Amino acid sequence: MYPPLPYNVLLIGFMGTGKTTIARALSKKLQVDWVDLDRLIVDRAGMPITEIFETQGEPAFRALETQILEELSEKTGMIISCGGGVAMQPQNLPLLKKGKVILLTASPYTILRRVSHRNHRPLLQNRMNVPAIKELMEERQPHYKAVANIVIKTDGKPVSAICAQIIKRLYPTRLQSNVKVPRS
Ligand code: S3P
Image (cartoon, rainbow, N blue to C red; front, side, top):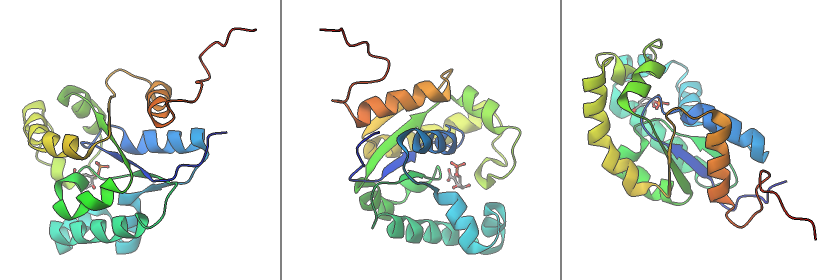
């Protein structure tokens, strides 16, 4: 058992860095609730993200994103996977900073491999190539880094290793399960 978290843990980073996958695995490991911000937006809007962008525009999506983030930041103890644009909106920064912010990173090559078979991301629709992903990533990276408490590279790592790295940072003084304690 891990002690309860007195804050929310928010996973941020570029599209395809594994925020949802890691958040789900981390919540299982720590036995705490996990919520996915994009999922909550879709549920509340009653339509997929691509449709929100098409029919109401990106500003409407961002307004809903901030509203739900605001609601979530009134609670603690949850793992929250955020969409890749959350840290780009200045009004979201104080809300993110109320929790522990974990930035997941991956190279543009890794991102392309992970996202190219999916078409639910409006901002990648005309960017399914390494130079375009790299350009958007370079524009966003300083914003991600400015709000992150912990930065974890995900390239070539299994989900379990990424979770273990995060847990080590969240509970630095706790003995990790792979540490052998000598018998006295
Ligand atoms: C976005 C990332 C998406 C989703 C929306 C906008 C972005 O989430 O919130 O399409 O601006 O980077 P993922 O990062 O989970 O793909």
